[in-house]
Amino acid sequence: METLELEKPTLADFLPLNGTDYIEMYVGNARQSAHYYQTAFGFQPVAHAGLATGLRDRESYVVQQGKIRLVLTSPLHDNSEIGRHIDKHGDGVRVVALWVDDAAKAFAETVSRGAKPFLEPIREQDDRGYVVRSGIHTYGDTVHLFVERSAYDGLFLPGYQAWNPTYRPADVGLKYVDHMVGNVGWNEMNTWMQFYGDVMGFQQLVSFDDKDISTDYTALMSKVMSNGNGRVKFPINEPAEGKKKSQIEEYLDFYGGPGIQHIAVATDNIVETVLSLRDRGVEFLTVPDAYYDTLQSRVGPIDEEIATLRQLGVLVDRDDEGYLLQIFTKPVCPRPTLFFEIIQRKGAKSFGKGNFKALFEAIEREQALRGTL
Image (cartoon, rainbow, N blue to C red):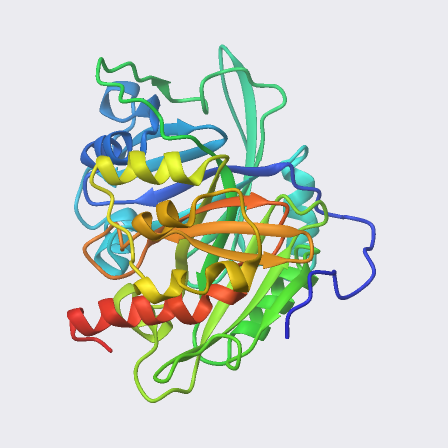
């Protein structure tokens, strides 16, 4: 079933969110990861923190493109919480930070509704003002931080210094985080859907069952939760029964439990963005040539040249509001876990339902090469 309307009346928004503030990844080598996201994805250097700024347990580099801010963090000693996260999960998303007007209120509202506290409200300050942060646990080891920064005009957060390397490759046109997808365990999707509904005031935007998202071999279930103003959207996936191991099962096996599967980032020109990414060495999933033979009959007229989309492997889908173009990278870490989606929306508010079969068959081909299908 797919519906793009909120499935229950919108109530007073007790957790107003301004958008995604930052995404923090725990990685084995923060400096090299920052270099990768600069080189391959065109992120710009912003700030860093570590021994030179008074930290003794970690080093972090902040890179940004458009409104997308990544924080790459590594431990400086063994037997650390960050190191244990990396040992268990490999490189992966630890923090999804959400921009709010009142971090203390966000914490109180969510904890009073059943969230497990992660970070009590804390005020951090320097000569550029102060930031208030708080946080709660979500699925697996993923946490949400609430970030209040109206009284701060620094580069990122107190404790960080400007990072000004001479190496600054151009950006590739990425604008903002469109959505972030979480994979959870068997029969856990509805539990986390209820969490986002009851604890954070999100509402269900779209639902897909195993008839929508399946191939001859594998299947999954998915529901998309959205906050009140639609600026934060979290699809949640769980495995479904199939003849072989699904991409969700493979993820859970290699990540060691639930977590963020992919980050969808928006562009205004997917053709130019993908050409730039490909030239920089980013690898994408490919679909059979035959996908494009019937593209126009399936989606109707589009502005882009089909021959160009065929060459790049860009997928197209249409809903009642317009159409979208999307493409998915191969995993960006050694484990077959985290990857990125590049998406351009031309009116469409959906998530590419018409592309699911082609996409998942592409993923299955990669699984077969890895010997995990």
